[in-house]
Image 1: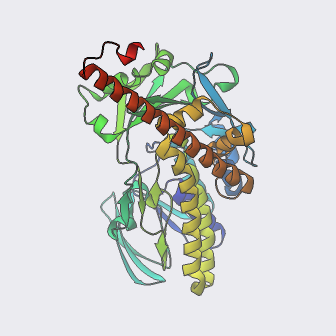
Image 2: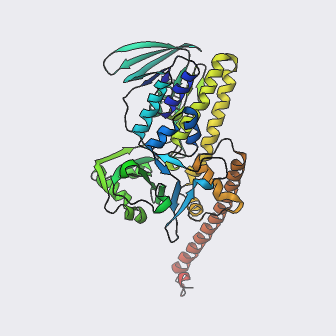
Image 3: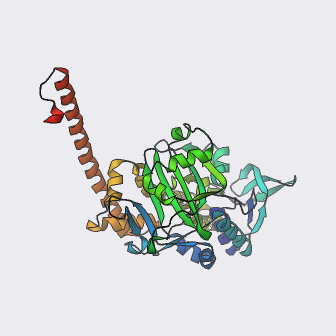
Length: 432
């Protein structure tokens, strides 16, 4: 049983069916359905190829050669082109309408032999043994039935079905965020070869994105601290436009752009994970296991690559049950390691040191190229990338200490200035 028909669930269902298993893949809603996360990573492409959908994705997507970030140069931004990555990641990715992308993957799972059922929601799970799970399913037409499964793959996304039932879900104490966004026509693309880039901007309360999509549409939004959204006044449309106007460079690209259908979406509480990834006869994949902030577009890649790894684990566990515990532990360790490498950048993305490093990239020791490899999603199996990312962390720490010392000096200066003014000094320090 695969619960959920998003990228993780569809990937797992397709690959398990190919291995000869009888797979039921349930989706509680109906495709196409809206989902955030339109920007894919280069490391998705090998997964697409192994799954057999690369050409289908190519037909759906906008060519994405890289990501660009604000900078204090003549162009106003720096491009991190994927072709410069130091690993073996592909030199480009795609950006897609998720409703079309998700539907294609789900239908592909059916073509691979999985029994796909839409409008069918799992409402309860009783595990009577490691290979005996009883699931109750309700349909949106009013029906209900039960399924007995040897293995349950939970790809229920942010519903976190099993994690919720077993109280495994936990909010990330280091990073909470919310998003407000919409789709526009008439926004300005980057010039030339950068036209398909995802563009990232900073503002006081978080960061913003611009993602070119098919048919001349641009996805534009902001990820911010939840308390900022609580300050909202007026309509969601007014608040979104007010937020986007907080960054002059982004706002300039919005001149003449029109919000499609006046539809603005708001979502919150992004970052969470589960205390464990699985147990005898069940495993969590994709957003059902964890979700990070979307600043580096990691969601779909982590979901699909994690699903691919989980399929290997499930197959091996069913063939050799005594190995299941060790296989699950290895799978979870691998997935958390990749997430942690993304998280290092995510948690620090809005602080002054990280902003400086992205605004002023330096390729000494191939550090800039290691960041490009991170942006491409190459965070699991390429030693030379992982070594340089460790070196990047050392450089970051050095810069952070230097920045802290500068801050301390400024604080001391201000304190001395205040003291001089308090005792009536005739030569204010700020004029010295």
